[in-house]
Length: 126
Image 1 (cartoon, rainbow, N blue to C red):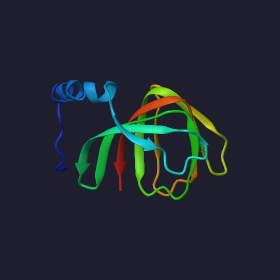
Image 2 (tube, rainbow, N blue to C red):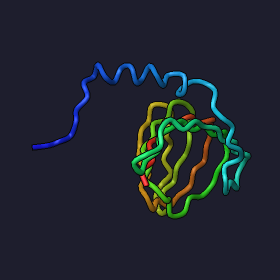
Image 3 (cartoon, rainbow, N blue to C red):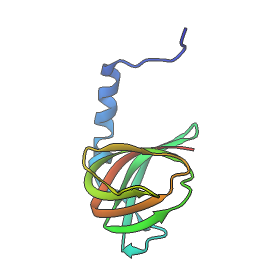
C-alpha cells in the first residue's frame, strides 16, 4: 500500500492563486546569462521554493544564445510566454513557445537560443 499523500483539486486552486503574481508580475533582475555568446540575454527571476533537493521559480530571459555542457540538474519547465530554439547535441533544433512543457535531464548538452523574451515556470531537481 502506498504511503503517498494525495491532494484534492480543491487544495491546488488556492496555490495557483497564491502564485499568480509571481508568474505574471515583476521579477528580480539577475543580470546577463552566464556563458552567453549571442545577443545580450538579460535574465530575471523569482525563487518560489527551495528544499528537499529541489527548487521552483519563475525565470525570464531576453533574446540571446548560449551552450550548456553537462547540465548539473534535471529541470522540468513550462513556457508562460515567448519562444526559444533548443538544440540537443547531435539532434535537430526544436522550437518551444508559450504553453509548451518539457524536461532537460541532468547531464544534458545542447544550445539555448531565446528568439522572443521567454518567461517560464520551472522545477529543478538536483
